[in-house]
Image (cartoon, rainbow over all chains, first blue to last red):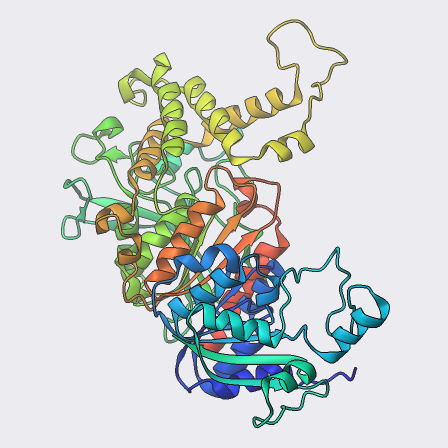
Length: 204
Length: 389
């Protein structure tokens, strides 16, 4: 992997979905990279929720208002529709109760943006098929017993969950292994097979 | 008490060696109880230099037994300033860049008006004739000091424990005068357990025959035993079980076996006795009653029909709330309650929960993650708000 200073490709795609000057909550904000990007390029009023002390400290040092807390337990304290967008980037699969978290995102935000690694990607399928062991890939580098990612899903699984909680998909994007967006004209099964990352813009 | 000490606590209570401002009859302090304190004085220290547009002032609020000597040698004990870890040249609160103010709270005993001060009306120490004060009263007195210094807006207000309560009170009462608020190891209210511990301390003081119904100064007595016991009890609440065990365990004090008596066999006993005895040389017993009472009465939500969020409505202040995992006096949950209220109010808030086994006192100790957070928060805000150095 090459070292570059460009933001992660999925962050770029998320940023393009955000209206300038809006109020944004980033759930699982890490070291604040996305919030920083959004503050600089979209002049958003951004807030973060992050579980790790290191991530919180790095964010605070960047001047970003970030709260140390847990998506599974702390979202209930946010008021209804307090934000224009609530973002959950690469975090859904690490929550204890993804359905509850998704419901909370849609309650707190006018819109929710969710990005996640697609467990339906062909490499994952092939790895399980041939090796008969839980897949460990470049993007999913953990062994089954020490992974923080306890709730993997495929793009199709996620679409089904959206249906179940009454979330309307306003737009969706999937990216292949090289970070290129998959054409919008492609059917879901194609996305689910070749998409490595998925990004959904939802509202209720 | 050693005779070599130039200043005694009693000297400091009335004519402090620090800076002091006197507010005369024209500037009374209206108290939360409805009483009026006038005239009164506020003793304070400053460090660093106020810039030309007076935008770099940071107010430090001290805890229950602290004082204005945060960054300088204590005039009575000769010990270093109580917050030199955090505040000073090149420190997270950098006195090379900021003008730092720290005042002794009203009701204290290091030179601001309190029960050990001579009442100008009678020529005798106030004792229990001093009015009961609140956290709000302390903050209103600080605001008058800040006015006196010609400062309209504070860049930051920072404090731990009772100091953190003052920070929250500043943010509520004078939101437009506070750009950053950093409440540390504190709560928006005193819990039943907090009040319970304070009551034990007060009863210890009042049970000492030398307390004389509060008039010990006039009678030339000193309720040192009661105050020492109060301090010993309180000191346990400032530490954690893990820290106590790490530091002392069941180690014996200068002996190889227990003595089958009531001498200080264990190191922890000896340590607590030392904490108690040294405390009474620098602190006034009545002040201890007044300040613990002020903390007990503190309940920010109560003044907003129980809705803490309403205390911070429309606040433009940026908050950085800090708690410590092993603090059982002001547990993290109390800080979270503040954070949730600030969120609900739409305020800008960061929250850092520092992992440590050192208990409540961690805010006074060398905790690099804590110091890093404060430094980062202040520096980023100074950058973003375009603070002119």
